[in-house]
Image 1 (spheres, rainbow, N blue to C red):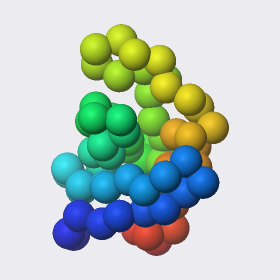
Image 2: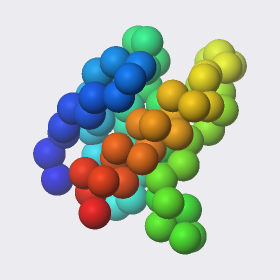
Image 3: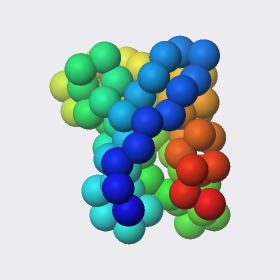
Image 4: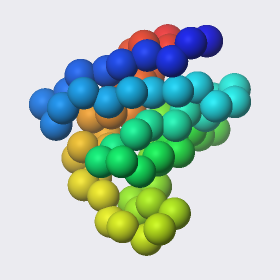
Length: 71
């Protein structure tokens, strides 16, 4: 699968598939890993590797768009 761009109310985000069911999303200059859980839903952590907190509503909107693109 190739990289793709999604649009949400929070902006445009580039999504790069990493492994099966895992995606890397560039959010404000930081890569955030999102992955499918056991139920098949795309989830994201609430914080980045560097410890910055992220807006969960934005993350949920991005996850929803990823799920639609990869369905």
